[in-house]
Image (cartoon, rainbow, N blue to C red):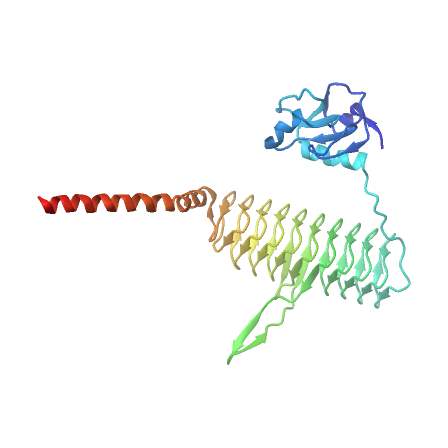
Length: 346
């Protein structure tokens, strides 16, 4: 698709500075961009690249210094604006399944909405419901009494167990399992006896779940993923966990049972949370942190065990200075010994 810079600026509600008649034919990162491409700058550490990029235009924030090399579009949020441009200049060419493949196995009283598409070898259990315009890729399993909303997109080899509820506009990537049994056992005489997990999972609208994620069903009530939350690949969410709205859960995070997470929380990669704690709204847990206690709203936690970010940074600085401190103590010890020897001589 070819659009002038002025046309793009109108679509993303930005301000053109420079030649608005430039024709844009592609999108690229600021390092890789070539003539005809539009790129963006959202992180100040890449600002030096403004002088060297070969892009024909750059989307920048309103407080970024203007580059001399090319035209710009100024916006409030360059990242969001660039995402919209990508959909305009380089639209996705993925063609989803249409219709219902003959190999699909449907249970009794399954209800399918309008324009549902189901690929080969999908199995849907009794009394399940699938909303309008939902697409289910090959090899998926949808358990009995499960409800899937409208315009959902479920990629290959996803397993959704019985009595799970999935909202509208949900995306689930390949290999994910939703509604598997929670990890609950009672030890009696050295043997582990399984505790039945009779609850369910409820996933809100506009949630996206990455590949190979596991979300366990609750023991009695429900495990909840709130509206608009985005979950990266390889995340484990245990039974009875409640996650609020618009959270970001990054790859390899593990959340233990009955933990409650507020709205707009960020859990960075490989963070681990124990069970039965709460994480307040707008909190951030940095990568590889181990959270063993509840976190107040708005806090930034880091380290293992997790503690306030600035406190953890100080602790790391002290650890890095240990070799220097050791040398200092060694010198002081030597001087003390020399002073003691002199005093004994007198």
